[in-house]
Amino acid sequence: MRQRFSDLGVARSIGILATTIGWLLSGGLAACPAWALPATAIPDDTLSQLIKLTENSKLLAIGEMHGTAEVPQLVAAIARRWSSEPGPDGKARAVLVALEYPQTQAAILAAYVDSDGGEAAKATLLASQFWSRAAQDGRSSRAMFELIDSVRALRHDGRKLQIAAFDMNADQINAKLDRDLAMANNLRAIIGANPTARVLVLAGNYHVRQRDGAGWDPAHRFMFGHLKDLAPFSLKVDAYAGQYWSCRGAEASSCMVSSFARASDEQRPLGLYMDAPSAAIGYNQALMLNYFSASLAANKAR
Image (cartoon, rainbow, N blue to C red; front, side):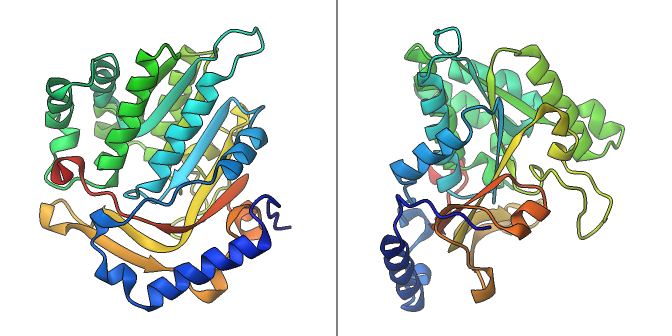
């Protein structure tokens, strides 16, 4: 059964949707440069509903379409709220933000969040291999950099925040391991090393599915299918329409802003909802926004 949150209001949902569709039909999306599109703010009431919904979850996975501005902002907002709340013992709660980055990036990320965030620290991070690849996909976008910087700022403000990277390491790549299984094993080790922390994971939306099955392999098990024993909460974030930054190959020329719009039979309620198709592929909840705005590669956007 689909669940609309009453705070959003039916009239508000219809009005926002009508405005968005009218803007799209008038050519607004095509006419407006990707970097000029404002990010869709997550309403405070929706964020509060999500925080309440996941209050007993130690492991929350956010599934995204890489290359948007909105989803990294949502992760930053959740980290901010989580890290401000006391744990069962009344003390500040430890929060670990885990990103779909190569594990070789872990030390570089940790160094940045421990830095003063000045130009030298930024330059060091952005000069690292992951952030200076010829083809930089949405995982090294400006919005992702801002998410990492928000972790740094909160940490320097006294919050118990850490950052981690769980994508395949060199040994796993050389062994030609299944990527979802390798990432699950890496994330399990990270969680085991931080037993008191709440863990907030940002990954591609396929990886956070808890049900087996993919178009290319009906038996494929995704990352969070391997982690069901940890009782994760998987949230899929989607939008009616918008733009995102992606790469279709290994060359810089393959990276670009792409646009999309959902077909009429793919429409879902604005805000948080749940339906049978989302449950069938292994999500606990879904969030529908008006649109996604593209976030370019951090080095390109500077």
